[in-house]
Amino acid sequence: MNPVNTVSSWFARKAQHWLARNVPPVSSVFLHRKNIFILPTSHGLLFAAATALIFITAINYILSLAFALAFLMVSVFVLSILHAFRNLQHLTVKGVGAEPVFAGEDAKFEVLLQRNDRRQHEMLELYFPKGLVSHANLLSGDQERVNVYLPSRRRGLLKAPRLRVQTRFPLGLWCAWSTLDLGMTCIVYPTPIASAMPGTLTSSHTGRAESTHPGTEDFHGLRSYQPGDSLKHVAWKNLARGQGLKVKQFVDNVDDRFMLDWAMYQGLDAEARLSRLCYWVLALSRSDVEYGLRLPGVEISAARGDAHRERVLGALALWNHQEVREGAWT
Image (cartoon, rainbow, N blue to C red; front, side, top):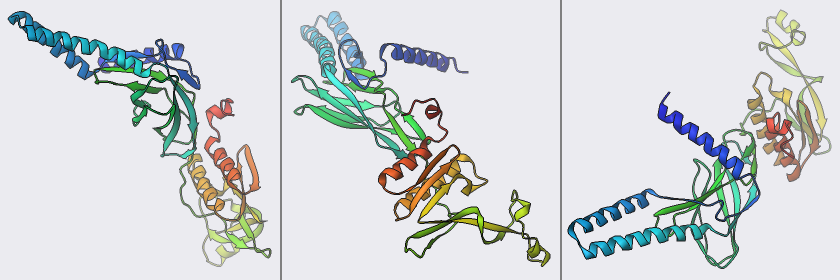
């Protein structure tokens, strides 16, 4: 193991522990001298090195203009600290939340910036670790909404990491920043995967939809035998006639509604099933069919509408999720 990486990881863990103890999760943060940090940037360090070189040259050659330039650069360097700090001071940062997304998309967390006096806040940068940087300015208005993006890799409840709010105003010599845990979360739906429906939708005598899905009531047809099929459903008469090994299919007919069932996609793992069910939720929500959802431990009766679609998608996203089981999601 690389010793440098080991030391770096140790310092990172210590820093996160210190932040968790001193900057706890809150929905709104008022920035002041106790939660704003400041350090010179790489340009600032080069500026300081150039200042020191000019000062040493002035001493060696006793150049009055070089002394004046060195003192001017020192003044600019020091005053930049004050301006960088004041550019964040008295700024209020609030976490608004995020709309649900599908796995693989960027979660868009909305953050509200508010100023508490007539002070202007310029060249603000907001981002999550390893995320895209969003820019904002508070010049004339009292508040500004900023979208900060975070990649989502899998379904579930995505908790936003600590948000970094920083500025290099005015000359880029110093960076003033604060790391905030605004307690924001985002529901991440499964990635929709197009698939054939194990059943068909037909028109009933009412003119609305009638659906069929795997069941035990009515004979639907024959299909080729697949490993794992029950032997009691094998069409032995067809086998005796030399028509090959076939399995009888039975379906349950449901008028005017469709139940998306966990058992529809036998042989697939949990995430593959959820992704295919997610695809059909989106497809059925665009029709007039009432649909419901049946998962292990979860059952949602058939209905339709935007609110119902969000409820079903949320059930797919949070099914068997650790934080949901522990009661962290309400």
